[in-house]
Length: 428
Image (cartoon, rainbow, N blue to C red):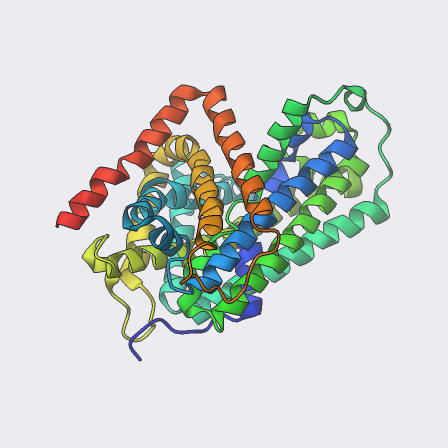
């Protein structure tokens, strides 16, 4: 058999959606959103709105994936909607910054929490992070079936752990008393910022589309996995934050730098730090596996189109995986970890994803007007929902530029450098 192996069913695809989204941020960074809207009701509303917006974006990808069920997902969508240059730029930004950067960043989160159990130091943390990338790259090198099973196992345990925390929080937690922050007025602009902060915790929802040619019945499986996965994550996030706010005074939630650990300390005593550190490590490791699995599929497809390094067009003859693309991704992510450059690159560029997401939603509206566009599944509320998504995405980008225009300008320049690179590859 000369091609990618179809081995990802609905459970594995859903596990990929959930496991990639739920990383470490929900366990440590809920305080930032709460600081922006210091009211339990508004916190719950902000997380729910962020989940609803994510669902709209996921449904956009679901329809497009049912129309173009090919390896590469978002890269393919841009190629078909706007032409090869825009597809290339997505892949260009993915490899050098967005995808490899988040891979390196989550690997460092894993390593930093490993430091709770073993003293590592700076060099030791980097070596642990690189080891995690290498181990998971080896897992996915050996086949999509093996990698999918690992993803499913980690996601199942992760989701069970999250729901256990929610149940324990409501069963054992004594409602916290009122706090001064709860009485603060809510600025509408801050609510929008809070929704934006929540949206970043939902990042990664689009990645399942990269594996379409390895998915069984992709025109049905991918839309279903996106719908089920995003709803499950939204319930998890809202439930966890409800527990945080039930157990801790809202002032304490805002001040906390490890809100999940502080919540468990209040529930079961000071020994909770180890449990939460283990959970964050486990969650980060599962998210890493999903990110390692999907990225090389984009680079493989770009190589098939003659728009990336020729070596990454290779499939392993036995394991039927894009083996060289997996190795190249592992190498570059490890370089970013070792040099520490991932943090600066990633923070400068990550917001630019929302420019691409806005273009995808607008592209779906445009594609509906083409007579040759025949998706197997159609998203409801078109064009209303996609246009609303476009406007929200633009607001996120404008807000980032307003807050730090110099960093934003550098990020845009990094992404825009893909245009000359595209014409170089095309000529070559």
